[in-house]
Length: 339
Image (cartoon, rainbow, N blue to C red; front, side):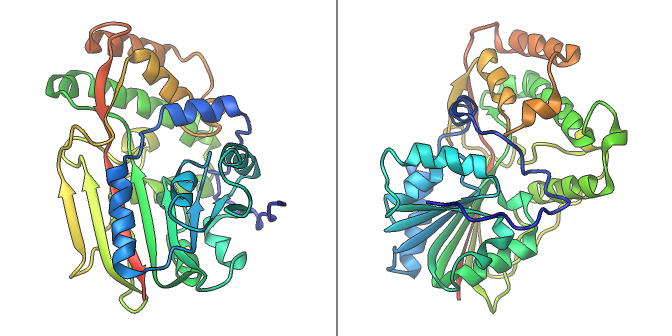
């Protein structure tokens, strides 16, 4: 199937980055949290409470196609979309092993432009993992509202950085991990080792994203005449952090906003050591940073002495090289039904 052409490039679309090799995506998937069936069940039960239709779902910002594969088990057809044609090619290669084109199709588009590629009121569910904070909020929500059928579901979630579950490690090792994160992102945000490379458009885009992440997705407003039964779930809010970067990395004040309206359901789990839990040693954490997002290593570069030294400190704080420790993930999930 031919992928559809990309809309004109947005000057702030710094997230459109290149990664067309399976080595990267295999490492990326291996170092991401594994979405649990209990997590997916929250979405599936929510949708079933509002609609009996499971004809068409969208996975927006599909990356390697992990969420697409889950949706294809529950919907007759899934559209996988991404703003990068290389990502779509990888997703198609992965998914073709189990789903032919009668089950999964592909659209090359930004989320904000997706309504120009698909009929109005055609989708039963839209899922967007790790993407909602990166897009133009209002344009994205408008696009989703146009595509969804009445009774259709929007499921948007975003997770933050890995977080130690042990209280002692949270105190002595997490600050080192957070420092490594800040130093890496400082390079990405500046465009190089010098902040002079940051354009006003680039800075504005990073600021918008940082504010959105810091809000735990509460920056999303749902107009009562368009959406109903808004539910917001948050895990590991007391010791985890949703933003990948904050003031220490970008140099400007982070200003989260909340559009949580009266009557919306809010479920907060302050600490859940079992949520998407995994065990990593320092080598696994290095790999996590190497493939933090497509193009990340190209943006950061190689061989930073300070970061290398911090990894040594982190290994010591974790009990030595090769010692695996348990991590969990902060996450926010927002569900809404199209009227």
